[in-house]
Image (cartoon, rainbow, N blue to C red; front, side, top):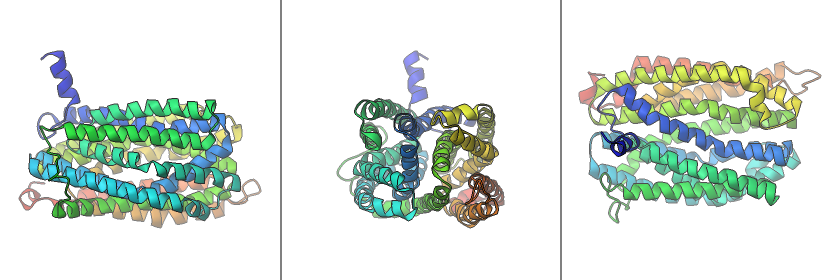
Length: 468
């Protein structure tokens, strides 16, 4: 096999219904992992540039805007999840017609959801920021950042949704190439707009939306060019009623799950804001490091959904069991390495974002609290990803409701009330991080229980249930 043939095999669309499951999963996951890490660089570089060139108040502003931005992006998350599941199942079944109709419907929904979010997000930003009562100087920067992001939200919508379709059919390489390209551009523009032109928080936001627009356009070009797999024309770009309903049915629970995470983060952000600017800035730094630590878990969750979806579409239920076990091994091994790195280098990681020693120490305590949770979250993501690949998206949603809303929120405020002192009159920042750890551990326990109980198998075609 020549070099070009090997590159085409490695970097092309992955059919995960044949071949060694572990090899296929690694081959699919490596570009996906690098891509997820690159995506996290968007917010991380923003935070580093803001923290170093503007200061802790601006860093707190960008961090304050984050949960609200995520809340308003739930529509994209729902469409992306439903599209990825349908694409993987139709690809596995070798159903070109349905795959083409699903991709065409997804493109239309991407445009519609982008327009809705642009309008709603821009005008709602000041009100939403006011709900969490940040310090006045922080609020001004947060509103500015959010409104500019929503002006260019169509690019982010196109990348997140269309890259989900590409991954669903086994293409994790080209989304990586487009994302790395956009990420490098984002870094250059961040430094140019903030350090050179002095545009402040607004410069960071403009850099982000320009880079995201490029990655979204590239994903669309890639899909249109995949003529060997998909037909994109006037016929397929007319939304297909049954497929669109199925896409929304599959994606709605995922969107609700993301909304719950975001609303929880907004409520907890209110508690964080009451603890002072130092804690806000430290929490931003912790969440940026957390974003990188979580990326492998999200990667393996996506790989699990794609692998299970393709093999269920192909009727290969035997490979579902093998692939899930292999992914658990990969996820747990990776999480263990990351936890060790966080414990060893946590001080240096937080120090990337700020030079204020008090902020660094608060952030370091937060990382130590969360370290064990990354192992638990690895298990949850793989098993919940497998459920979603089968078409079962309700169980992961209910687990998120219980762990995030019923457990984490009351616990954070309770622990804050119990840890009030002269140093921390509104509660210790440990309450933020310990409550999150506990919710992750309980979420893992519920995920393992429901997966082993097998309720998700009811979503399988009847012919496959007895073999599952």
